[in-house]
Amino acid sequence: MFDTKSAENGDIQLIGRLDASQTEKANVVLNQIMTSRTLDCKDLEYISSAGLGVLLATQQRLKAAGHGLRLTNLNKHIRDIFMFTGFEKIFTID
Image 1 (cartoon, helix red, strand yellow):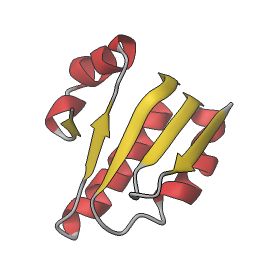
Image 2 (tube, helix red, strand yellow):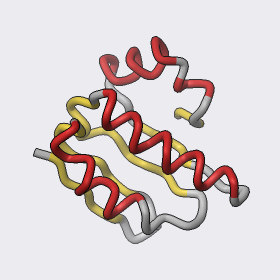
Image 3 (tube, helix red, strand yellow):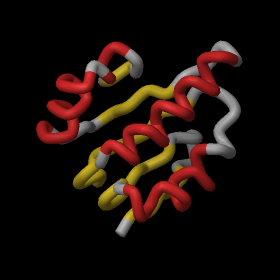
Image 4 (cartoon, helix red, strand yellow):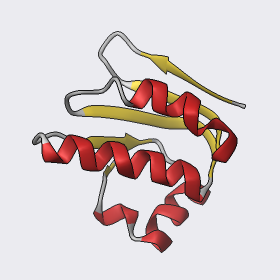
């Protein structure tokens, strides 16, 4: 199960498991982002290659407009995935 929450400051919290079965749900939220935004991943338990693809597509779209995503609070497992895939060079990770 995957869900999102929007904070008053515009940050978006990713919750649960972002896998192939949840990419449509993620795209609904991420496609609405038009400026730089922070994604809080403290409650993101898992991300698959399909989930990475959704984030990458959003990042590429935003970068083309001079914006981007910043990811915060990645757990060790997810941080390792970003490191092994080279995504730590594509995203700003705090």
